[in-house]
Length: 118
Image: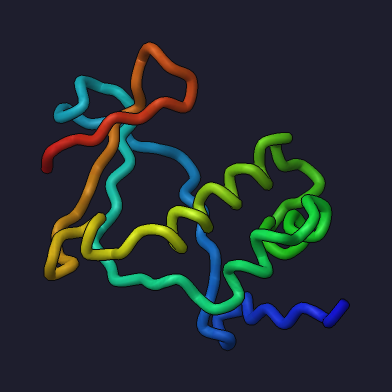
């Protein structure tokens, strides 16, 4: 098979980011809230080959701490990449890509989130 070329550094124009720690606020009744400021994005050409990587390779390319990631890490990365591939920024952040979005952690589901109006 051909070698996989993946620009994942800032110099290559692509990078994956992680949010650590979730603040709480009055809007959510004290629950964890994740707010994402609107930004434009589009799927990058390497997204399909990255989705096809075996777990051990995906882990090395996408994690800053591959030795201590949760078992669900690769599934979560693939889910995020499929979201990027399958959704348009204007469908998430409005037609002009200027509407921030926020989610509140659901109290009745582990890792469940519900959208908030902001």
